[in-house]
Length: 364
Image (spheres, helix red, strand yellow):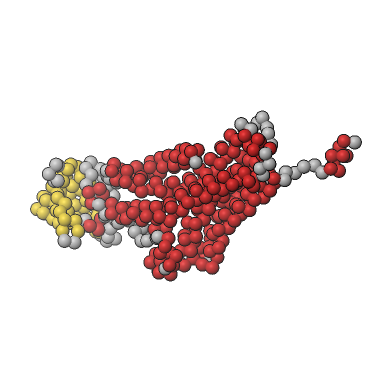
């Protein structure tokens, strides 16, 4: 468990840094504060932890088994009569503990964090201050719209404002103003421009008309393009809701019953993968004999066996999404993984030995 915690910490740090860099570029570029970045990073941690726990359990099982073999402790235990099946019991207990951790993540923490993260994305996507109020930068808050502010005073006054609206096919309108203010109206935020000029260019005739104004109110609520991914998805749902009301959850998310079944059983399957990874790592190393070069070959074989399990998982993904009756296929990767581990343990318990006939022939 100590080594499992170490490997999990290292892997989480690697994945989290990679994701944090992407989040930092996206959020800071949109004008959000460091607190928003930290909030989003914290909400993404449960998903990252759930992703790396099976790999951490595999790494811990392989490392511990390698140390036991290198220090000849495993050899001593085997000499007392313990079979590979008996030696695998602690690994199974360890795998079950990790599976319980995975279950807590996949059934409770990850859905809650993803739902909260999606809600926060929707909230900040409509933030006027983060999307528009940035001085000295040409902004494009929506398709066909360009916005620029030279300076923002401490009193909230916008100076030298430029707004280009090219969303209509038959015209292009450009507004410039010496001063402007953002006010909150009953129907959304408004931009009040003072002492400005409106230039309208007809695209067909290329005729340009200009209008001077002392003050002009412009609706900027439609410039903020809200997050289009605000709809619920199966990964946002609670496990219990998908168990007792699968059809209602399918209607709520706008998906099929097959997609709900895949998400529901996939959460149980992810927990089982932690157990499978630990047993495969331990069993594969038991097949090796003593070598001064270590157990590198057995580790490579164990990694290859995990790749086989992941290939099975990819192969059953499309059928389970298309047919609700095929949900048992979701558990096929774990079944295959446990079968592989059983075969490897059997080989470790009864390794291949030359037959008596071949030994006698070799002696003669």
